[in-house]
Amino acid sequence: MSAPSASADSPLPDGSPDSVEAAAARASRSLQGLSPELTSRVPQLLEAMRSVGTGLELHTTLDRICETAAELADAHYAAIGVVAEDGEGLSDFVYHGIDEATAERIGRLPDGHRGLLGALIHQPRTLRLADLSADPRSCGFPAHHPPMRTFLGVPIRVQGEIFGNLYLTEKRDGAEFNDYDVHMVRVLATEAGIAIGNARLYEAAKQRERWIDGSVAVTTALLSGSDAEEALAVVAEQARHLADSAAGIVLLPDDEGGMEVVAVSSDEPNGALGVVVPPESRIVADLLEGESVFIDDAASDPRIMTEIARAYGPVMMLPLQSDGRVLGTLVTPRARGARPFSEAERTLATQFASQAALALMMAEAQRDRERLAVYEDRDRIARDLHDLVIQRLFATGMMLESAQRRSVVPEVQVGVGRAVDELDVTIQEIRTAIFALQQGPAEAPSGLRTRVLREINMAAVPLGFKPSHHFVGPVDAVVGELTGKNLIAALREALSNAFRHAQAARIDVVVDSTVVLADGQHGVRLTVADDGVGIAEGGRRSGLKNLKRRAESLGGDSWYGPGIGEDGGGTTVVWEAPY
Picture 1 (cartoon, rainbow, N blue to C red):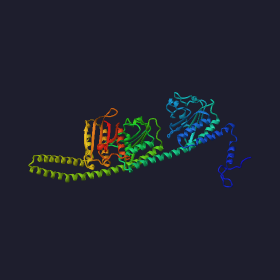
Picture 2: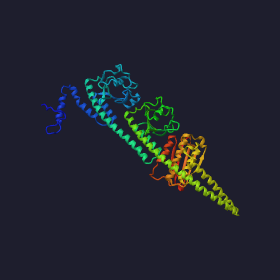
Picture 3: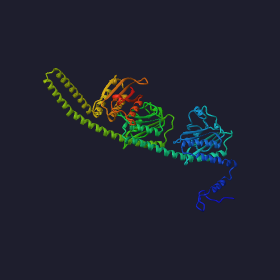
Picture 4: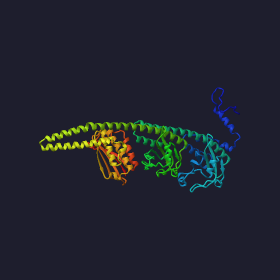
């Protein structure tokens, strides 16, 4: 008895949806005319389609398609070659049927630039071969590859565009793939295209969400009061994580027209911190013009001028620009042989770089405000010292000299004379401090010893006392410029922490250039010890993390311990690095 004719979505008279029985009847009619063998395999096909459509993660979906296709066509091996965005070669190759040990012996995966796989990229059509090695387009197999003879290739389309090709080889009974296999695999490839499309949409949404969260993290780091160096470190770390790259690197323009690496996030120390890319580099010129630079393989690109960069493969170099001004560059390199960055990743990374540039603008404005406030305080303090303190000390000295002349007791005359000498020394020290307060940053001499003394003198103003200092070894002669610059930054960080948190009455600074580090290298060690309140449990340690990160980037280390107060009160910060 035949079922009434109705469309798949037409309602019944009472308005309820079409019944399951009606749908089953239509399905039965659609199978009429099919061969018994094909009809008998329909349940297996339906189960395969159901399996393929399960899940949303893209790579898992590709794995499931390979496995399902192999079961459906009774093949030993299955694979999907994902066509690259430029249509040249394969960007990914997912396989089934080859164990990991064999895959490791085979080595590099097919790239689709030649051979039968390359031909199917440029001519995406169903291809069935009784012996693929006999096809003139075949280029053979690499060593340790299992033998493969019979072959079936079917294109996979996603929304009408070629996504890749599904390959099946070695039918289990030794026969060739037949027409029924072709029909089944074609239907499966259509369903696979739908599943892949859904997985790609899901993955794109998740990817955008991750990049947005990364931008929020950078902005939050600035709004929470983090200093400029910590903000740059957050930018580098977030970019590395989001771009799935081997490192995240931030470069800022230097005085010579090049760009210097100022922040690095990497699982492995790479010695990049402090490296300067010279202004002669064509890449620097493009970046300073506000142009993004994308490199497929840094190891072979002739524009690369630093040896460190040649250790990587695909690289994104994105200018950090805001209001037409280039503040720096964000670099996200991937390991050699890694997949290139997709168009979606490039777009998202460019948007992230714009947000990071805004963060840098905010940090720079904050530094300018702080610098202006410091200069105003220094000018006021210098005037007060000159107009009030020195004049009073001078008047006190004259009074003591007058008392010395009137005294007839030799011991009193000697004691008063010493007091007058001490006042003269104090007046000279105050005049030196006034001179240091009136110096601009560009006037600082280049010697490390002098720069350390300058930092100590500047810290004396907010502290209310001058930290003591001691140098061991030929500091100026042996410590290189990069290590010296980082040591000064570490000293500034340690003195700033002592002023803001320690409530110390005494601070000792030691710079020792005679130490031998744990790995046997000669290095310099900075020790800043105070007698303050110490580090509170659960308190912020971002400054200490900055010190450790800066030291480790140079191959050194940093730690802290008890201070110089009573019973170990206070904090001692140690920072060391090779020359």
